[in-house]
Image: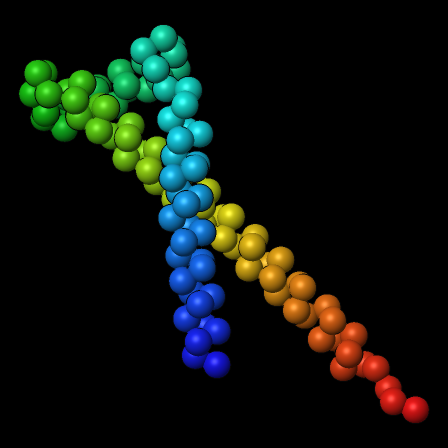
Length: 107
């Protein structure tokens, strides 16, 4: 009983780790110096850092850091969403036959 739970938990952790890396790569693929949306977002984050009192020389670095952290957060959100759908699918695979077998009458 405990071995099944331990293996299931380990499998879910591995799935979350790999899916976070995959989603992070997909989110990071479009961010480059030629992307106007990425430049606009970096400018917005630099302005936010300026309002918070970060020196001018460090605002762009802070903006890049914030953009990277935001990518990490979204990659984790998407990975947890993948894990949730895997668990829902697993539950359906087990629940539907269980319900059908519980209603089966022997004659």
